[in-house]
Structures are given as C-alpha cells and as structure tokens.
Image 1: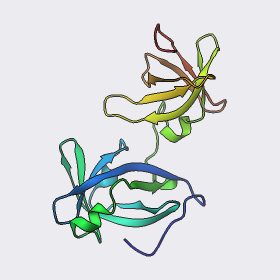
Image 2: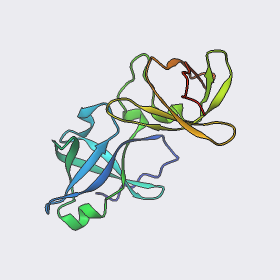
Image 3: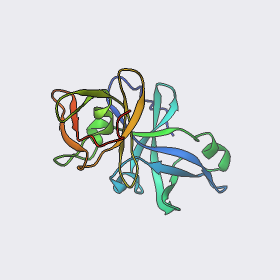
Length: 179
C-alpha cells in the first residue's frame, strides 16, 4: 500500500469486494467479490482498500485465483499472514469513474438504496435500506413505515420497473411477501 490516501466524499467510491480473512502465511487474502466484473480483480488491477474509516489507500493486485467459490488475492505490500490479517473485514473499492459501464436494465446497488417501493397499484410498501448481492440473485431489503423489514428477490418476476428519476421501484407482490 502507498501513502497516496483517498478520502471518500470528494469522489464517489464503489465497494467491489470485502476481505474475509487471511489465507496461508505469504499474505494472501480471501475476498468475497461484490462485482459482476471478474476482470476487476485480475493481476495488475488497482483497487482501493479501506485503511481506516473515511480513508482509503491504493493497492495493486499481484495475482488472483479462485478458492472455494471466493477470490484468493495477493496484494502488493502484503507479504505475510500478520499484514493480511490486518485487512480482515476491510472493503475493496474503486472510483465510480473507473467502474465498468452498465448495460440497460442494470443498476448499481448503492443507487437503489433509499428508493421507495410500491406495488402495481402504486401503494407504498417501504424503502430500500440495503441490497444484498448474491451469486444466485440479489435481494432488496425493505423497511415499511412501521419499521418491519422484509426482503424481495431482485428478479424480473417481482421487479416490474425501476424509475431512477422518480426514485421508485414497482414490485409485483405475492401472498406472504410483505408483512
């Protein structure tokens, strides 16, 4: 890692992965990817690692492979288990301007947070508080006006429309979906 720290706030940063734990004794880390773009983690890629709350430092990916469904990364300057262990739980980020372009019908998870969810008739269901990104399907976590939390798979079967301009997601509600 270098002394070229980046402080979030001056520019938009996107989380692309989270360091789960160290692996072995040579500084490798296991990473849970939160990016659909596997090239993001290839050797030679530059990422930002959360150095402290509100402060990120650039880091270079020296090598990358898969390990039990997750990524195994070697990062420049991380040469032993102790330094890798210090990264446990840290986010890996990229500048929004460096992100892969989105296709039609694709959305950044952070752009969905805060949007209102309504049913087909326009009735308010709640607000998106989180998006859980999973390999099989993403989940919208919603909180209704009473504070009850529920989850909706972010799939075409249930998500009828995402209107980013209005900040509204229209959902097809089935029995038992909403508390």
